[in-house]
Amino acid sequence: MSSTAAKYYSIEQELKYKQHDLELLTQRISNSESYVAEQAIKDMSEKVAQWESDIKNMPEERKALEKRVKDLQKEIKSLDSGRDDRIKFLEGQVADLKKTAQQHVGKLEKQREKAEQASVELEVLRNDLQAQESGDESAGQNNDSLQSEIEQHKTAITEKTSMVKELAEKIEMAKAELRELDECLSTLSK
Image (tube, rainbow, N blue to C red; front, side, top):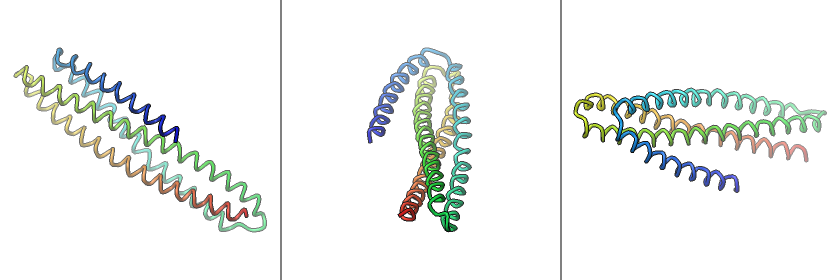
């Protein structure tokens, strides 16, 4: 519970920093040319590409965890005379799986935070582009293309956020299965 509270305060503090960063970025862009906005969009594209690759790796790790859980279930069914030794061995494997699942949950939370951060940054860029459109007619055509690119990034981030949520739900299901295995092991050890 305290770790959740610590995460909340950490995220809240990070939000305040990001809001301050947003104000500074808005001031800077309003005083600069469209080149600065283009550079920011390029940086955002690189970040989004990195986040996409991170998210793509998540299902593979989940499949590996599910396979290990199935292997453990098969081993539990095949328990015989060496029951106590096997129970200790399986308990160790279950503990390892729990640690791995916790790590994946942490990664998913980080991805969620990154997706939210990217959404905020995209909103800032959109506002900056709108401000530039009203101030510089020659940059109007360029701003239209940047606006459509921002919308594409926002759509991609929204999709990735939903994927992250789905993965979090799947991990919670895997955790539940692990808890059931743990309960089964404790029942077998009695």
